Length: 116
Image (cartoon, rainbow, N blue to C red; front, side, top):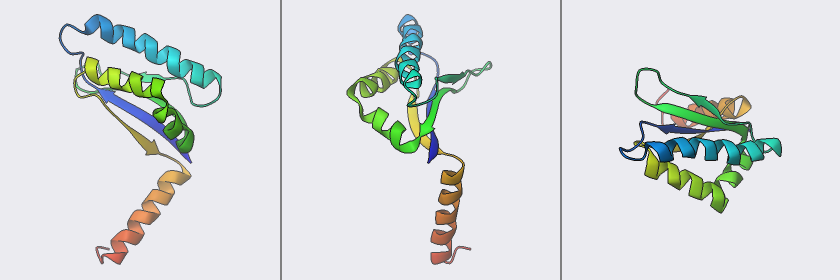
């Protein structure tokens, strides 16, 4: 099932700006190696030019991304992000057939509750 791990964050915590920049390099190195091994895409960044939430993501198979998340090095990297940035969160998002399956399950559950 195609998916993306999407990481959202706001500005660095005051006094941690240099560490936040270094973190971006670390993300690129870690996930870049995984991308070179064919496990996910290279990290892609989306930075807001007017403030607010920024994000980076890697794409791949949901199962593979979930396995990556559980590796201690990835856990450390994600934990570090929470210590460096305001409002740091991440989640998996399905796309393609996975999104279609999700919508069908939603419709079936809603019908079972007589909501539609």
